[in-house]
Length: 315
Image (cartoon, rainbow, N blue to C red):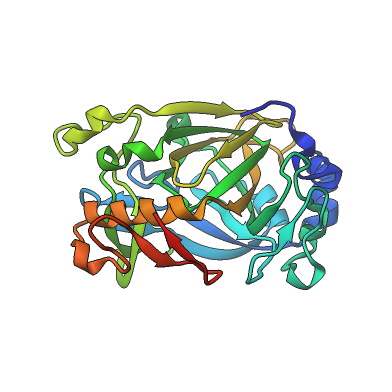
C-alpha cells in the first residue's frame, strides 16, 4: 500500500479526483448499479452470504449513469456501481508502462484515460473497473463486500471516500471456509417481495466476517489472522492473486451535494502466477468437498493442467 498514488494509472485518471471535471467529461457514462434498501441492517448492499453461508444473495441491479449516482440523494436506498469494466478483450492484451488500452477493446470513452503503471515491466491486462456510489447508511455503518478472493493480481486506487480492506493471505485458505454458494437474487426494494433462487453457483466466497468471526460455526477461523488496510483518497493498494479480502466502503460529508458521501475507486486486474492458481484452486476444491479423482490433471505427487496459452504446467 502506498500514499499519494494519484498518477498510478496516468495523469488523466489523476484528474478524476476533481468531481466537476469528471462529471463534465464522463457524467453520461452508462453503468450497472446495485440498488438496495439502506434500512435493512442484514443487507450488506452487495453480495451477501445468507443462511449460514449456504447461499449468496445478489443485489437488485439497475441501469444508471455517473451523473445519476452523483445526484442520488435518497437516504433509504443505496445505488452503487460495482465492477463496471472499461474494456473487454480476449486474449488479454500485453501492455508495458505508459501503454493505453487498445482502442478496439474499449467499452466506454473513460477507457482512453487509463494507462499502464510505470513500475510494472509488463502486464497481461484482464480488466479495469470502476466502483462508485453514495454510502450514507444509518448508524454510519459501511457498505460491505463479503469475504472473497480474485484469481488475478489487483491494483486499486481510491479516488473519493474511504475503504477498509480486511486481508487474509492465501495460506489461510483452510481457516476461511470456502463454500460453493448457490445464488439468490434480491428483488427491487421498491417493489417488495422475497428472493429468487437461481441455478448458478459462486465458488470464490466465504461466509466468514473478519470483524466478528463466529468461532462456534467456523472454529478453524481462530487460526486466520487478517490484516486491515485503511485507504483514503490517493491511496493505492496492491493485492496479489488469491488474497482473500472483505471490503468496507465509507462515504464522508461534503458541502458539494454531488460529492457528499461519494465513494469511488478504480482498479486494474492483471494475470498472476499461473502455477500458483492451479495449486490454489485444486486445494480449494478439496476443501469444498471434491475428491482427488474429480480434479482434472491430478496424479499422486503432481498437479498437471493445460494453461490458457496451451502450455503444459506442472506443479
